[in-house]
Length: 215
Image (tube, rainbow, N blue to C red; front, side, top):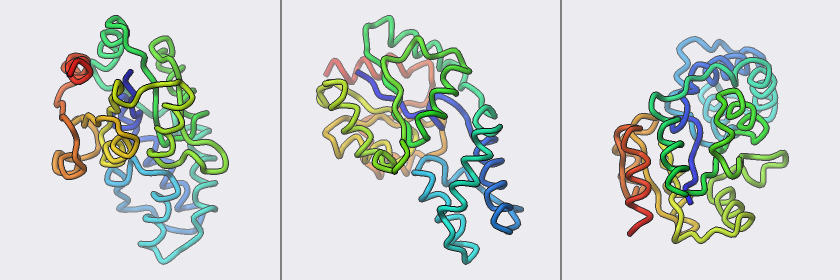
């Protein structure tokens, strides 16, 4: 089985996330000019908002999260672009017989809309993300939930993502973590997190995943 992150792994979602972060800051009375969201894409939204607000001396995280999700649900989530070669990679992994699951810190309802909008739903055996109440916000909890619900063996699965959270989350549940280098995390970040392997091109993703699972 292969579990895939969404933002920075399957899609470039920076434009929509930037727009929704800006809208959230404006809703709380802050000027979003100079905002750099690339470095904060990946962690749970509450952590992102806390980081952005902390720099502005504000602690209204819940209000910022609500404002973000309001804007994101209305328009931000479809300001995305599928990484070139990613659909072919999904096709190749499916053709090779892998079970494929989406594992994102994004709200599951938003993730489903994105996958359906991109017409990728046929490749996935399950779509998982954060849910109301916050119990699956963090990757270790999310991955443990997927393994349990789908009755997957961690030793027969690989987590694919572009940030340290994906790698650390994978290792926390005894899965291997594959870091992709076309997303938002740097090579140094992924190496420091202990990525079991790195892949530079989407064209090499399916082969790399299959090689890791054959070991």
